[in-house]
Image 1 (cartoon, one colour):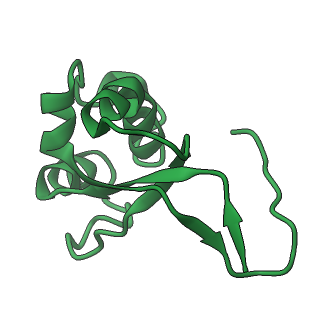
Image 2: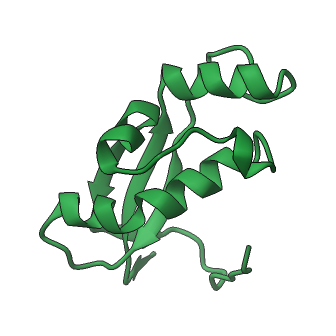
Length: 110
């Protein structure tokens, strides 16, 4: 087991996100409103202010979460600030990320 030099933000869709997803993509994994799987976003490992991190990353997280539902960003909710973001996602923060696998991490750009 290895400690990875990253912290994390877990972003979980709210019912409002699910309602939006259903209205734009009936084949979405959110169509039954029962899947609320969180996405894990790795961030700097040392942080003190969760609010400032959310301010820094909420737009990137929103885009990543909306894209699988609709590739047309004109369909996306307008997320201009953290309060709007919080209507669509709940978040949790952590500073310990452990890699339980022996295999090296790999990455791909998206």
